[in-house]
Length: 200
Image (cartoon, rainbow, N blue to C red; front, side, top):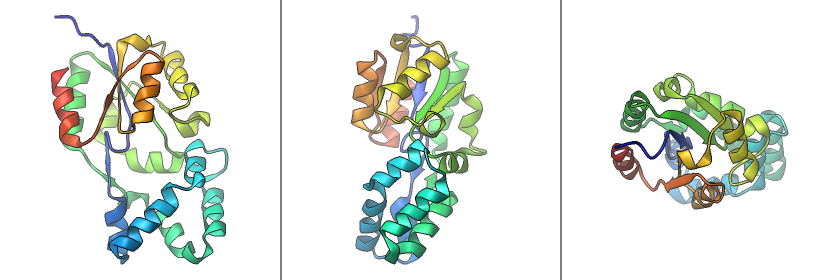
């Protein structure tokens, strides 16, 4: 039976990699409650989106965070300059991605990331050897779910949207993908993702 899809597109965070943001903060000595408050302080702030878009240098955005939350300067600078503590490997996912690559699927990345964090989190990761191309928000100053990042993927690699399947952990990004003609699968956990990949 002929494959329905010719290529697969993956987000990175909570798809190809897990994250241990809260554990990282708790390991630093914060209580769970304090860690959760710090987590939301960082990720719910529009400045995190500025990191992903990278109109400003990474260090300048750190300084803006510090200016906004001066009493948390030490924690902010530590959090944003120790990226190696953040990711969690997902080797069982990578095995399935590699198997699908060998079956003939083209593999692409479509992700929101600053350049510094993307490079830090993906360097020497085995799944990068299976990647045929990538569009990351810092490269084009546009982020999911905006149209530009999806359309850049299609045009850069001459892809037909109807021939691809996109994996992402945020519903707004999968909805946008479908709006632009590319099927999408909402990733809720690692086991569910692996099960889906095995079906392809």
